[in-house]
Image (cartoon, rainbow, N blue to C red; front, side):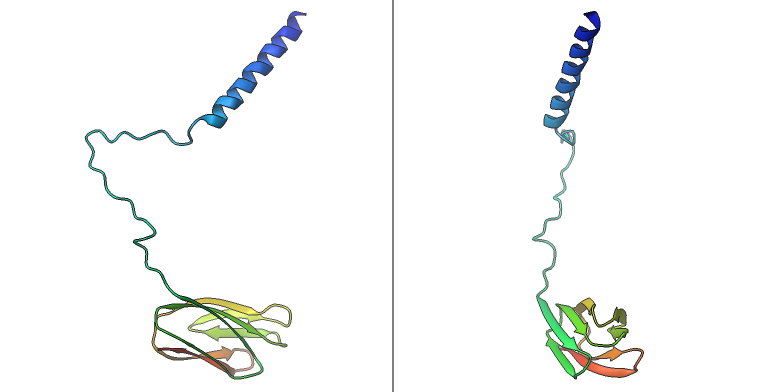
Length: 128
C-alpha cells in the first residue's frame, strides 16, 4: 500500500515538473539596468537582392541577361554526364539531375557557361 502511494506521488511530481518546464521561458530575461542598449540588426538593415530563376540546356546556346547585383538561380540540364562551370563555380550534371547554381551577379560583363568535360561553351551569363 505504501509503495503504491509513493509511486503515485513520484508520478505526480514528474508531471508537475514537466508542466513547469513546458511553460517556463527558454532564455532568462536580461536586465538593462545601467547598461547602454545597442540596437540589434534587423532584416531592414540587410541588403535585398532581386532574384532571377533561369534554365538552359546543354544542347543550345543559352543566354541569361541580368542586372548587376541580381541573384541568379541557374539550372542547366542535358542528356550527358559532365560538369558545368560558370563564374568559377562547378557543379555536376547527368541526365536525371541538372546542375544548379545560386550566384550573385556582381561582375559586369559576359561570362561563359561551359561544359567542362566536353570543353564546349553552352551559354553566356550577361551581367549589365
